[in-house]
Length: 184
Image (cartoon, rainbow, N blue to C red; front, side, top):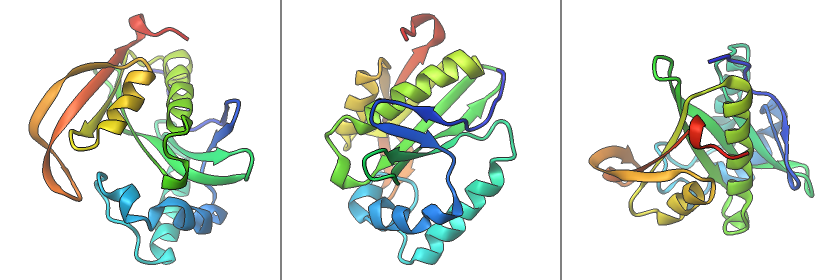
């Protein structure tokens, strides 16, 4: 892999960019404090803006690492972050990355996550030259799987009691896409 870090990516409706410290209030308002958004995630809803500020401060610090990929999903119409998409795990030997994402519920079912994920897929295959992109979701959250399918990932199976999120130990469905299968 040829790590390039978090570079700005534009799509018709979105700008995917590195987080800024000034994004904390919008992030808190739009998704980090929302228990519905975090229901199937591995971290709880933020109870206070200071938590969001601390997390974003850590992300900003991590951007100096070329193998760190954490994008703010910014809707061009309102010019503020409405979610995030990131590489949550890297396996250098397999040239594999795992993607995670979350989006404020106000923007659910509008194709925003799929638009962001497709752009990240293109960047990771084209620029970083990964061999495999995968994503997992709690089987009780099938809409996340719909995003994965829409982006070209193939369902590969369900891992029983292999994940942990705010519901406890859960079954996870896994999806993958190989560089050889990717169609820009």
